[in-house]
Length: 582
Figure 1 (tube, rainbow, N blue to C red):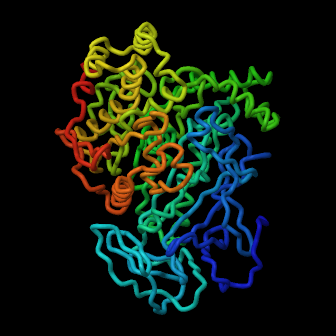
Figure 2 (figure 1 turned 90 degrees about the vertical axis):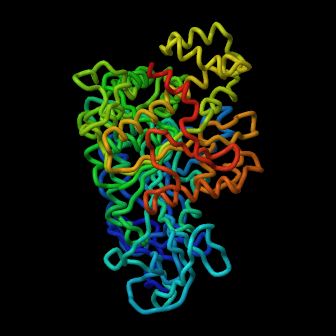
Figure 3 (figure 1 turned 90 degrees about the horizontal axis):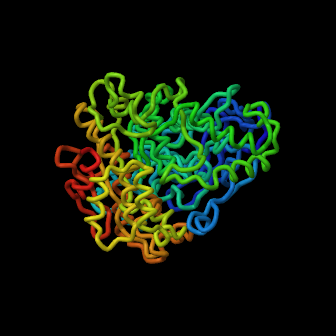
């Protein structure tokens, strides 16, 4: 038994929301009308000491009631370097128990609510709150989202303990969304205020956000340790969700995983992993494409860190290194790496033969037929993504997309947009093997654009938009049972001329425009109606698999969220997209 910070065990009568999970009792906090939060809940043992560089181990049970009212420790990391640190706040919470989740859930004083009303372990009846059939939870005096139908909420139990027990959770339960953060696999956490799950719980979803190991601790490649430890952490968190989410009113059979950037790449890897099969029903991939590196290529970053530290590139040697010294070496090695261009050293998910038997770019599209997979660059969704029986996770509903100007988050603050000359553009196009015909199309469509903007548009499409389109096409050709939807976020931020840059959509998806951390990217006057529309689409997708527009077909429908009102566009910028397949 562990001994966490505990409340005096006097029973479930103090008024705070409480839940019983497999490891013990939890005490959370009410964060809004009808919403409870349980923060920093461990899903695995602290990955340090004897467990450092080892696969995640189940959390030890505790006695009494564990307080879950503050964010748990974040994985060891350093903040973003200037100037991105001002745009992407990344809080650090010290401590070893970094393998933790946060849970936000619809909740009344009598316990978690389902679409049938609030519930607790008893079966008596009270009157409390209102819910909607579309999954939107409201309380007295509030208004449900447009398009939903309110219905009275009249079931619950006597008392004000807010207690739940997984064995007694009723049906129908709430849809569940599990958030996997981005940050190039070296930054980020579930404590970032932009990712606050209150709005999702307000609207009828049980929202879970996950911490996982980062950098060399999570994605180092060693001869004496398992690979993909950070991805194994994510799988362990999903197992925890399956086993415990009913205690929060969630439905373990209706789980949607969603993530952005490195989180989206992680989602693609989970879709291709046999170890994650059956742990979720739907997936949302935001600004990330399927990719993984071969072990030997990924090992180079670990070896570079080892060289800087002056130790062997083994888990045993790294485990003896002070954590801060290791972070310093990791930061120095990855400082010149670019998630957009792929240059420099970086940590990546790897094809390890266990968690990932194959490159997700191939496994998810059925491409690389007749042995051609060996000739495809790692992480490159092949042109011959023909679909067929080989398409992994074809039964999972999929929502995916990008922002229109992903590149501007890196190119604008760094000054690269201004600094890149025509000669540098030509060299970059040659180095990245951009087809000459494709480059001509992009230049012709942007006669007033600077060389840096042309390169950025090409990089955005090559690394993100085109691979996601090929993935959607492969699922269509395969006749995938799971539905596929595409979106594009196009509202331009006025901050520093960032435009519709990478990560800008996050505050809209989470409906957290009012937080200072969101305003760092959006400015103070971001359109609320756009956030309402985008957030509602994610809620609807998690609820029944339909975000509100036509599924992918031969006309290539894409929901454009901004710059104006959301609208479906058929085959946007098709001349540019198709030029990559010529």
